[in-house]
Length: 234
Image 1 (cartoon, helix red, strand yellow):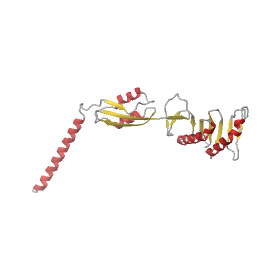
Image 2 (cartoon, rainbow, N blue to C red):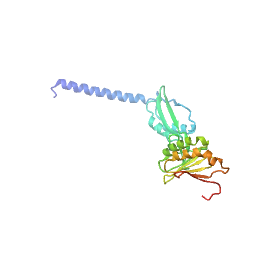
Image 3 (spheres, helix red, strand yellow):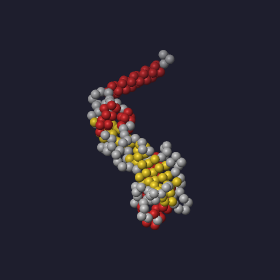
Image 4 (tube, rainbow, N blue to C red):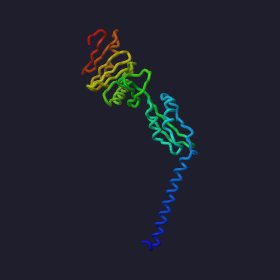
């Protein structure tokens, strides 16, 4: 082998190439860490409506370190994403020397089981709000199902000019809604949309003509419904 000059020259060239590459990589890493590449600005694409400026500043102080090239974008994104009202975050470098942060906030649709909130995507999140919202109550991971049925039933109720203020999905898989006028409607376990649609059709010619406010309506009958007035025992 030591007499093979061509092989020795190839090995020497390879070792030289590897050495040059290692030197270049080391030099690049050294240059990228120089203070000449500082992060001057963290820029928000849009001003958040719910996330407080103080919370964002705290995350920036704690999570953003290094320079323009070495800053950990994923760590910064995760630090912001755990804040209340933040649904998702994207963080990117933007020349010259700034980070651009784009925050998508939750849009609250309702309260969930008196302990959390549901957004317009049917996702549960924890935050505080003093805005008047409907109450959703359900089991386990049924938040999306409850949200979708709430939208469908509200559309059916449009002729009555009533909105749902509470919708419940019981452990026995039965549905119940309460309207803003105070009426409680039992929908049962199946054909909820069809049952409510039939009720909306006949309501102007039946209960709407009654001088007494209806306290509760049970739609779980095959060919009709039961209505309970104030003072009834049921």
